[in-house]
Amino acid sequence: MKKKLTVIPGDGIGPEVINAAVKVLDVIGDKYNHEFTYHYAKLGGIAIDEEGTPLPQETIDLCKASDGVLLGAVGGPKWDKLPGHMRPEKGLLGIRKALELYANLRPVTAQRSLLDASTLKREVIEGVDLMIVRELTGGLYFGQPQERRQGPDGEVVVDTLYYKKSEIERIIIKAFELARIRNKRVTSVDKANVLESSRLWREVAEEVAKEYPDVQLEHMLVDNAAMQLIRNPKQFDVIVTENMFGDILSDEASMLTGSLGMLPSASIGSDGPGLFEPIHGSAPDIAGKGIANPLATILSVAMMLRYSFFLSEEADAIETAVSNVLEAGYRTGDIAEKGEQILNTEKMTDKVIENIECKIKN
Ligand code: NAD
Ligand code: IPM
Ligand code: MN
Image (cartoon, rainbow, N blue to C red; front, side):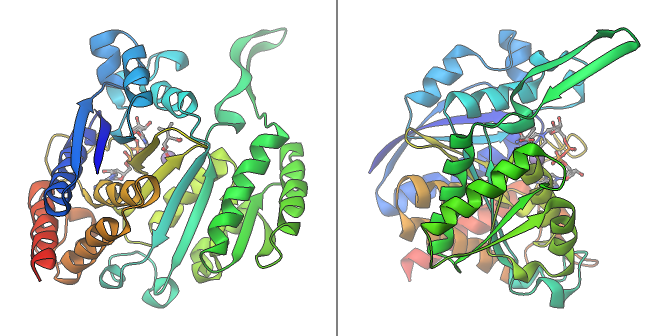
């Protein structure tokens, strides 16, 4: 198989974890006879510095002309004082919108060997296997107006939460489709006791549920959901929610796996290339040290192989290698317990690669 990929390293630890992911993908290409070609593109802070905009047109064009996009992370303190429309994060939102990536899948799987790396009790997280389906191109992130102005009583700010019914419908359908091939349960998370958008969300979920009699639907208010994720995460199969709730709940849920550095994601639309990125950010506190956990990005590559290219054997090879490496006791700093030996980004990546290679030889 031949695939053209756009690779967007971004800022902070972005380039560090992307290098790791590309190395792993190269090994998969060699071993399974696929030809992956890479076009590098700029987004975020580096694009602001070098091109004067967080999302150069060339990046959009490259992404649209490719079969898949791999992204590290964007942002950092250097650009934090810029006006909203010039921030690195605006580039990320822009590329998600330009590619119409309305569905962001964030799987949360507790690895057996990392049960003690989490701050939560082993019995609470053992066996956790849930999928957060986050709406990605609507809601507060994109609603207009978004502004700051002088009102009669001083400064006023406006953010707008806007959803078309069709945008809600398609993400809920995606959640039900996923639940159908998982454990057949959807938890729709909203704030229907306060927000009009959530009341429509709930109605749409009910309507869609009628088409999926084999899938069980429950509604949960977002504040309760935040608590339930920590109290008893095993109750969840597929969680579907709007953009901002999904952002917050997925960082929270990452701690069920031991670290934010473990959670991959796939952003997909109706057609066109998908975008695959870890859920974490550019981690300015550890950037440049070569110690970031590359596993979330490596696991995002597995999601690309599985969801975009239907290469499930190759995806399995990566996921199994990651599990084996963890099982063998290799750790980056974020998932290490006291006394455990800590590998840097490069060494951890090499361990994953060694494992892929020896598995294939067997
Ligand atoms: P962050 O996710 O960058 O970091 C939060 C904490 O988790 C930090 O202590 C960091 O060191 C740690 N961490 C994150 N990824 C890790 C990894 N792979 N290995 C080890 N430790 C890891 O969140 P933040 O500090 O709130 O944000 C920093 C910047 O990143 C901001 O500019 C933010 O806007 C941006 N951001 C970008 C993305 C993205 O590009 N998708 C996502 C989230 C945040
Ligand atoms: C994420 C990030 C982004 C988001 C930011 C950087 C815009 O937090 O991918 O989770 O909120 O979507
Ligand atoms: Mn986030």
